[in-house]
Image 1 (spheres, helix red, strand yellow):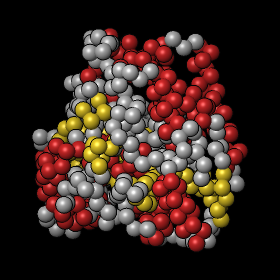
Image 2 (cartoon, helix red, strand yellow):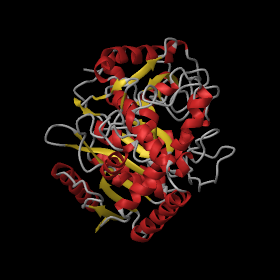
Image 3 (cartoon, helix red, strand yellow):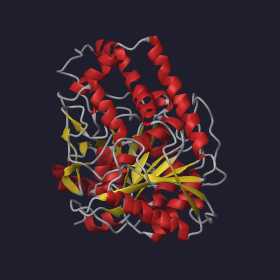
Length: 476
C-alpha cells in the first residue's frame, strides 16, 4: 500500500483490511509515520510521533483494528506517555494510568501513535502555543486549524491518520472539524465517560470523542466509546441498538429549526449562509419541515456561563504549580491564561455561584425555545477559518475581557450546546469562494445521537465530501 492508497481509506476501511489480513497494523503505522514526516513540517499538528509506534501492540479485531490513532495532548490519559497540555508548566508530565476512553480505544484495536497539538490547557479556538508553535490548516497554512482539537483535525485533514481523539468544552471538536472539512460530533453529556479522573469535566461542559472523515466512522466510534463507567455522575439513556445499525435505518420526517441569523455579534458570512440555506433546502426536499428560529439563549449568558465554567478551573493553578515545584508566571504560562487566572481568583463567591445559575438559565431557555423541534440546523461558525492569532492565548495585548467576549461570540452556535448537554455534529457541506471548508452544525435532542447519525448519513449521501482533499495532504 502506498500513501495515496492509505489516505483514500477511512478508519473502518483500514480496519477491514487488517481483519482480512491484507495489511498489518505495523504496516499501517509505518504509513502513518511516512504521512507525518511528509506533511507535519508544514502543518505542525503532531507534537510527538512515538519513536516506538510500530511496536505498539493491540488486537487485530474490533471496529478499528490496527488503525493509527493520535491522542489529543489533554484530557484522556495514556499510562507512561507524556501529557503536556500545550503548556510549558506541564512540560515533562507523564500520565500514570489509562483513562477509560483510552482503554476502550485500545480494546477496539486503535493503535496510539502519538500526541496532537492543543492550545494551552485547551482554552482557545486557535491552536497556537509558546511551547509548540502554530498549527496550520491544511486547506490554507495562513489560516487557523481551530481549537482546541486543532492538531487532531489538521492531522486528519492532511491524511496523517483517518481518525483522532478530540474533546469539546465550548466547541473544541466542532470548530476544527468545521474549519478543516471534517466530521466532528460532540456527544450528549454523559454519553462518553471522562473517568476515572475527569467525569463531568468543566462542570459538565466538556466531552471526549473523535474527529474523522466519514459518518460510518463517527457511528462506529460512538459504539466504541459510549457507555457508563464506575464513578460517572449519572447514567444517560442508552441507545436502542448499535449506532452502526442506524446507518441502515430510515430517518423519518423531522421538524427542523433553522438558525439563519447571528447568535452573537459576529454576522454570518454570505458564503456560509448560502451553504446553510442549501442544506436546509436539501432537508426540505427529503420531506422534513423547516422553520426559522432566533437565538434560543442570550449571547451574554453564553459568555458568562461557558467561559465562566472554563475559567473556574484556573483557580487551582497556584496550588498545582506549587505541587509541580514550578513558578506561575510568564516563564511557564501564556499571557491570556495568566490574565484569566487573575480574573478568576478575584471573583466573589456570589459571582462564582452566578456562573452555575446562568448555566441553569441557558438550559431552561434553550429547552423552551426549541422543544418543538427534532433537530436544529446552524452554521458551525459564522465564518470560515480566519488567519492565525485572532484570539490566541499567546497575545500579550489581549485582555481577559476581550478574549472572553471575542472567543465566545465567534463560537456562540457551539458553546450553547455544551451548556445544555445536547449532541451536535459539524459536517463539511461546502467550500467558500476561497476554497476553505464550511461546516454546518446539526443539533439533536439530548441523548438522541441516533437521529444525528441518520441525518448525517443522508447529507453525506446527498452531498459526498470524502473525495475532497486539502492542498497539503499526504496522499498528494
